[in-house]
Image (cartoon, rainbow, N blue to C red; front, side, top):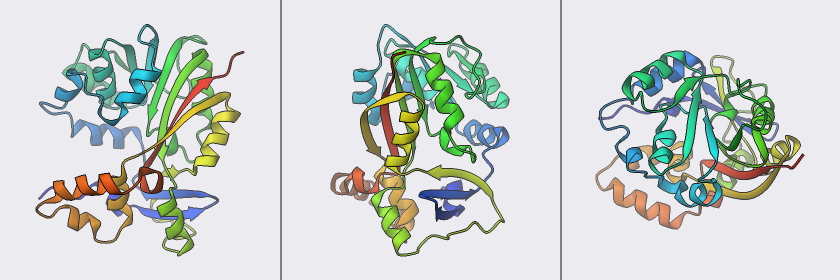
Length: 268
């Protein structure tokens, strides 16, 4: 049987309007080990066919096909490969040296390099589009340096597409029922935040972005984390039919694990 995912053992704390996860330390070594385990034959198969999964509509509508784009915190570069297969000029930056070396060895055709997404070595207004999927929530002091750097390297009017874990209505309801701790145990490292929609919108506006769209994603992941017994039920025979039925009936605006913002860098 497939082992349980690492995040199943994380402790969750609700305080200050954010949900906090504690468990693994989100270090370069952690991400390098995690992603290299997934770098196997066939990993890029769907990406090389240009498959954009549930982001098809957003990415195609919002990214300028003639522009220059960056994925900040790109992991193995799956989205870089998928968008390049669709004709987009996009590169990736990742903090883990070991992971970048592994990607460069496996896929030397992909422009993935090492870099600090809070201090990138590119000129101001260098990019037309900036992608960040599940990255900025891992800085315990807050995501502000990442957002400020994204604004710096985007041209005026450039597009930012950013997703983070979300303190959704299901999680907020569990918080009211006191199903989360109010203080961390001190036994685990900080891992990530889950932001409320209004808070993240305010952070983006404060960094100089004008929000255009908000989307909610990944109901199944949220249910696995938040509904007792769902993980085991999901592994039973017929789980695919169950996932399909749930995805069709539970609104992402109520129980999406991630929230995704599409924003423009303000002019000037």
